[in-house]
Picture: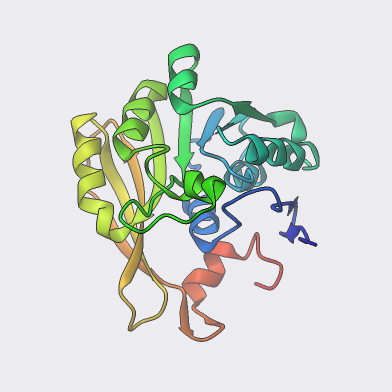
Length: 237
């Protein structure tokens, strides 16, 4: 029995999704800037739909679209959207990124993605989990190429990736004229290695702001930075 994951303003069922709610996604959903007051948002590879739901809570965007290729994750995302307080603004497409990019004529003010990775790790016997976790399903090149076509000229794109992939990701993005505005490096504890990079891109070159976030000082002793970023969502923050 998989209980729903309860946030302060919405709940997520995730029993059909290979990729469960994780810190990466929640950090990205909370960190992504909505200063430009986006009218339209796209979540690429939505899984449970958590990023789209977080942005529905945080913003007044009238169009919040999600894209999911896996059958069961798509069904779950649709259910999670229908049960949310903002269901009238949320819509999930069941398609591959390629199909979606080729067919859609609209562009988005904000695109967000927690893309699959673990490209270098061994694969499990669980195909659904592999699809969610491995870059084969959506290589970075493919993601960036699609974003460059789907993003408004003055739009913003944010993603969370493994820190060790950062250089390659930035290099691929620059070839598509997407340049980093802000980067946040995530460390589990003060002594651990940097695990993740949250990156915000636009089509305009600017000086990149690079900051660091440490999640906890010791087991379950969360830093004030982490609490401040996630307190609107996590029940116990």
